Length: 307
Figure 1: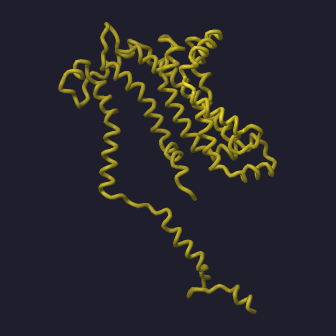
Figure 2: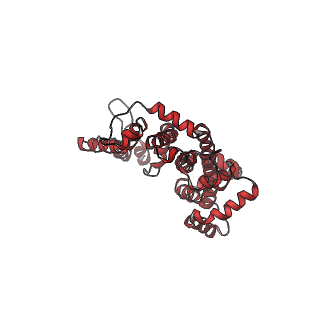
Figure 3: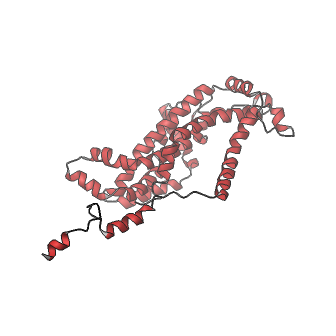
């Protein structure tokens, strides 16, 4: 009888069973967890000021690209856009094949970003969740390669692409950058915390093979970090100048190599044309940020909130 009495839960006036006190306490405590707090006027003023300071270099690039070289080097410096943007763009396209440079940079940066994300995720999963002999030693060697200056590898790497006949071709820039030690370490650190080993073991118990585990378990969990890594690698590859300048030529350039041949006619540097070309080289990166900005921000903040 006592057990029957204890199993009966109190009811309210409408006959509904009241939830236990512990459940109500948990609900009250969890109610404020996702509450959004509005910032004060000082916070908004600070954010607006920071946004203006961050956007001013881009605005000044547009202003300088729309004026002549005399306008931007002669005081007072103009602060409003001018009317020479189209003329400067024509000069840029006359001096270098900017269309081909943009296509080449898109191919190089896109291929390098995709391959780095794929291989780094696979290697990061192996280092984070798979047990094999020499795992820690191999990871140490991979991380240690980040300390090697790229200048030390120029001569042997150039000898390799010369023997292969790749000088002046895009594969000479793509193949040496298919995977990066930073990407492996980045994905290893993320998967060590974000991927429970119980999910992997449960998938193996259900009969899933390694490729299926990677596709259905690892990739969905690692998607935020993959977006961040892909964006970082894409920007780095897009802005890379040192090795593409050595391996490529003005006949088959990337954007950064093409910029080296802009605005230097008649032994004088046309700063307005150079800035205009830099603006053209920057617009694709702004487009990528606009398209993938939400995924990038969610990936960066993925580890900041614990459930």
